[in-house]
Length: 386
Length: 233
Image (cartoon, rainbow over all chains, first blue to last red; front, top):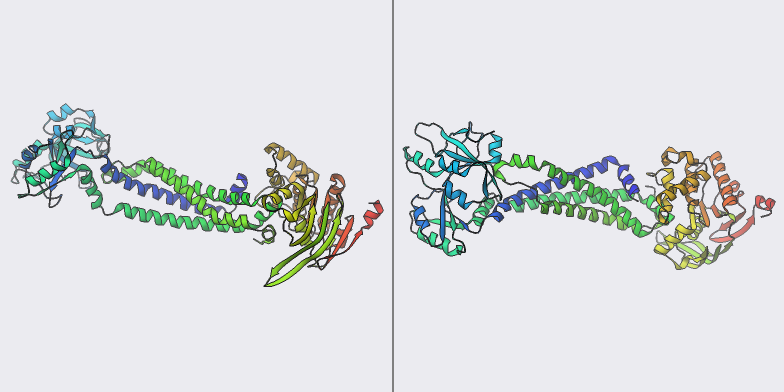
């Protein structure tokens, strides 16, 4: 029976190839598009419940006074506070852009145990005023090694003489959870602050504060206390949980899950209809064969199985090839996505969904022609001229 | 072997009822070669389809190989066909995507035989019809006469009691038709099958033992052929 299925499918090679090809594209797209969503959501899901982010109530792009740090530290339930400022410089030329942040180095590494130094050392990083910590992928991209001098050309925080900021690589990190990506560059707040104080710009403000709450502390009253503290200015703040903060980035990119679902659903529906069409044409061409087989003693049910198996073989071949292609292409796509989708990886859930949809399309596309084949009267089928 | 009593069959065509068989009574002996003749529309193919369990009668009794075909349907009727009947069609009706060997082995997939046994049986059947050297050819690589011989091999491979042939020489040239008829006669003689062959050709009919004449859905007459008379059958 399987041989007959394969022979029938290869009878019209071009048609079968086109149908399989369309399924390959559809399942490949589905896996990639869904992975964009799961990657975005992974950041939110990986967020720790003991971390809060404090930002300006006006906008994420409005800085907060440095003096807020001590007041936040004094709030009941706060364990540690880490200043974070987006630096926005580039390396060598404007195309060599990646995320850079000035942070309180020691506190940052305490608050983020997910950031694990795999080359160099924490002690070396903390001891070197111009020391920096970079993600493994970033170090690999620029072939940086521990001890390398890395000049960054500032776009926002320029020195008065316009010279580059000098850094020395003291640590390369990996992340155990996608709270940060491995293409980011961290350096010491003190270096940032002291350098800026020496310029005409003067003391810098803080982009956001990351707050670690005490173990067992209820985050809601802590957030309320911080927000209340600065209710009358000079800058009102908004405290959020890390999960909400991450989700904010997702929502900034628009309703991506909806668009992805709409595009993916549309593609799948189109492919499903194409598969139904292919199977109906195939079944019509096999009308006489079905009549012959029924005359030989094959039952209506076995004809139903034959057509369903044919549909399943066609769809499973295309679907599995598409999923396999997506898995093979994953490293290249992850590399291409860079910092936009850190931790881009096709999950087992996405893979299983792809397999389930493939099987579903296979069964549904085959049902109508299979049912027609099973209902076909033998003498009528034998009269068919197809 | 075949007992027909008051058999009727009609079809709906363009809103009208077309009666094809009208209370037909007929008996056929086991192991005999019958030719079924009659003008177009006399009900020959309809009778053949009913006897082969491809269609169901509207009324009457139809006993074939000990089974009342009017009372079985669906999977049971399909199994009965697989066990008892071999078909040979005018248009050969081989599955085009399968080789000659695979076509002949196809009905055997409904039996408990293993793959190697099915292959051995199919090769033997092809040998019987002299087509073993074309076992791996597809139907379109064969001539009409060769296709029909493969179809005959497929009809006998399950060792059925009855072989039903609907105009088996209708699409063949004179030489090929002669070879196919020779083959049917030989199989009838060697395998002792009951053969019912629909034909328009009096020369083909004379190769049978008896000729059953149908007219307007009813039995005209049954006559023994000179060949049968000469042989004392």
